[in-house]
Length: 200
Image 1 (cartoon, rainbow, N blue to C red):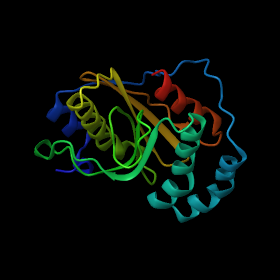
Image 2: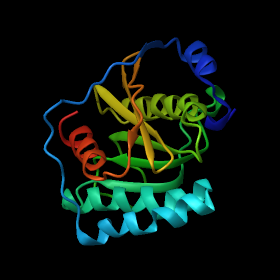
Image 3: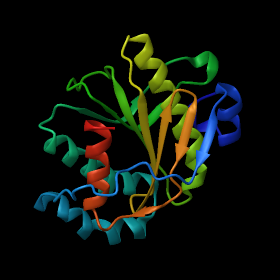
Image 4: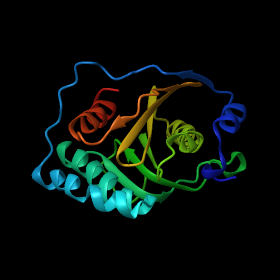
């Protein structure tokens, strides 16, 4: 069963997870990150991505440029993978493709531990991507443990490009911030990613 087959109920049962809903876990006083003029161009492409309205268009025009900007801001000391096979434990359904995966390793040819942020792209219905995103976060947790990296908290987001919903996984507990953060503005979303990668 690949990641895409997981619903919230299935992932809870399979991995004995506890869910906490509606709790914001980002600090309130995050400094907004000012994007480069290159990334400001994302906003010019929003009408096109919305009109085409496919996951691929939204991923390519909005999500990927934003994540690569975060990588540039962090001096390319992280890696960003797009459409990467992430097969961790096929016997438990932890296999398949992650839309986007961020690792604290700068190595870009293969996914190296510690994997810390999963991004699942959805056309519109963010709720439909939560089970899949959580399964990918569990896979990242197990991947890190197998590589002997102890990462206390992993993060995930389900995004349409114009709406972003964030999650975190600590041990067996998943916290889902039920706020759908809009883009634009782009600055808060970038601040969230910088915080998750550096301080989360």
